[in-house]
Image 1 (cartoon, rainbow, N blue to C red):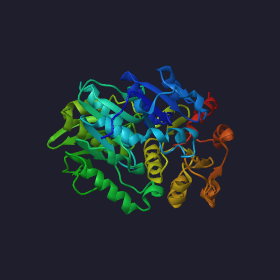
Image 2 (spheres, helix red, strand yellow):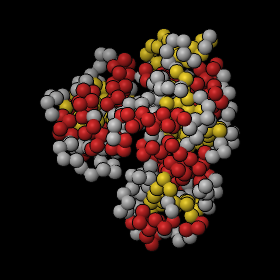
Image 3 (spheres, one colour):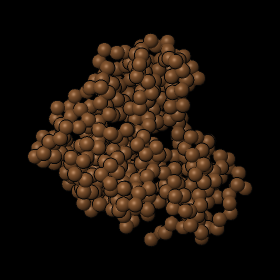
Image 4 (cartoon, rainbow, N blue to C red):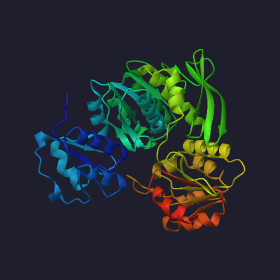
Length: 434
């Protein structure tokens, strides 16, 4: 069995999942060195906390730690041709998922899997257990507003982690209990087809030693969300920027509210409550605490509410965009919507082209940025122009002119959506309405 060593190197330290693990090691007293392509708010925060980070492939910046004293952790988002990836081959580098699996050994682990909603559900669970006094440790794929970070160091026995299906990463985990939010087709560049993805989710479920809660209908899971299930919701209404509902846990009922709009987030809340109850949190405590959940940055995050509504969201799959638009239309049924969207990955755009077109066409105006490539090279014929073809309400714009195009749209609700760097445009867009 591999062991984590005293010095830790992160190749791709600026990733949301990588930075959470880096924070854990630093707060555990270990020295951290990292590389990433560009400086970001996250990397600057890590540097302020003690990490040494380089943004070039100049190997002279390495502190010189010996292989036998050093664990090297990498993300597949960094190409194998990168100078640091080549340099650390002899160190026996491990993926972020394997490092998370090693960290979870011997811990009472609660894992949240699913193609959508992992971060929201994980953050809700962290909040419910923290408010109940369970003091969990958590690794989350987003900045939790209640915590102000993507990581929480607790003294309690519970560890909360996102179980990421990308690259079959979650198969490094063997949690005590789990939730599976959704199993929609995604990452087909890894899995090939939806059936292979479902088989891998089933394999993950078999590695859970206790219950797995899910609304998906998967075999061997405890169903939630429907009348008569272990846990479900009724009387769901949108009011004052929140979804209010009655929580049913077996024969008990509790009134609660979630200030993170969308019916899909009510389902995520049910999963978080189910896992919290497994850990010992009472249903009444969970219902009360849910009402003070602050949400996550870039997940239905409000940047302005009047006179123009500005919302930022991480949605990057047709199902996620549908859920976002459903929630917005429920809250603002009489307002015009301008959807600013940056497609993420050429392969995802290719695989779900028609689904994207269907959802983007729902907005009164859609401003489409060029595809954010992340780890990929271009694919012939897969462009934002191809996405916009035949839909009069869609206009392809450059990032530099997005803010100007937004104000010209004349819409009441502005959605800034995508998993790339479109969020960098939020300040410029807000300034148009100052």
